[in-house]
Image (tube, rainbow, N blue to C red; front, side):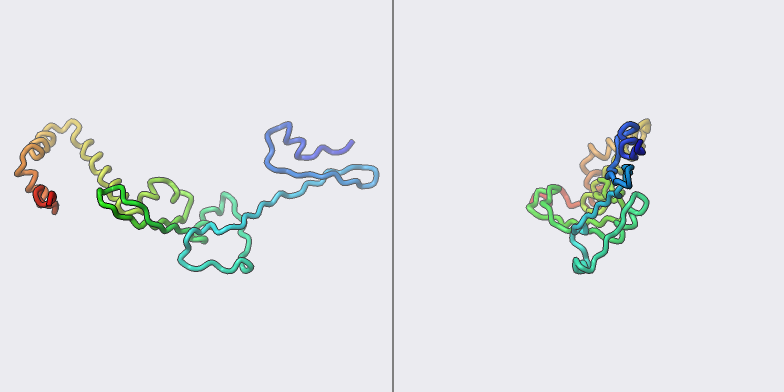
Amino acid sequence: MAKESLQHKLDRVRSPRVHITYDVEIGDAIEMKEIPFVVGVLGDLSGKPDEPLPKLKDRKFIEIDRDNFNNVLEGMKPRLAFKVDNKLTEEDTKIAVELRFKSIDDFHPEQVADQITPVRKLVEARQRLSDLLNKLDGNDRLDELLQDVITSTDSLQKLGEEAGVKKLEENKE
């Protein structure tokens, strides 16, 4: 009786990754030979690189696994550079976006937002407001002080001037 191949055994135990076998006749016996499954991906995965890529014939295959993925990604220096419509203001302008990726974590939304200056400033302002809300919770004195500043136009303008904000009348012009 011929030996059962790893592929057929894995079919029973768990769903297999890709295992390819073929039968070889050696004398009167049939032997199962396993062929390694190798995938080669050929493509420009660097986006808009700072330096031109070498010619295709000069490039080498790079073996990637979960242990060296971040190192390979950093070595490829992937970069995206483009302009997007500015939806943060009423003006019909564009925002220049340049994204660089050195590890798989750089693809997380927080990391992407951190690389775009206007979006990063919005996230920081949101964090400061959240911190203020946490400090305000249970602090009646701070709550009264902020209510006074908000309702008093003079205090609000003085605070705005200290922060470098133009007066309301100047902003309308």
